Length: 109
Image: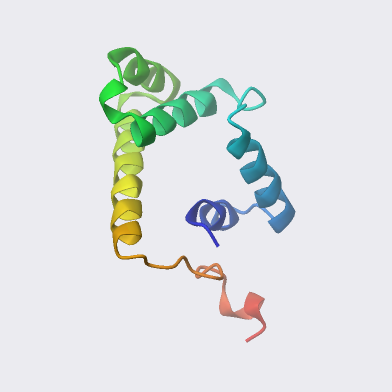
């Protein structure tokens, strides 16, 4: 299970909702999402692919959508996720097969 899928499940989305959202996100066509989410996706994509090309306008759009403190949180979290992905990739660490946050009762234990 990818970490994005896991976080969406932790946020309360059902399995089919997670699959549909991930599929839509993967297309790069985020026009169906609210403007604030589009700003966050765009900055996260640029920060992940071309970090040197993140502009003051990108940061301003994020701050306008979320406020300055939340924009800092989003930038920091995106950068941290990229760091963790690169470490995991370098060591070829596998992703978890199951959602490690699923309560034991829901797993049938």
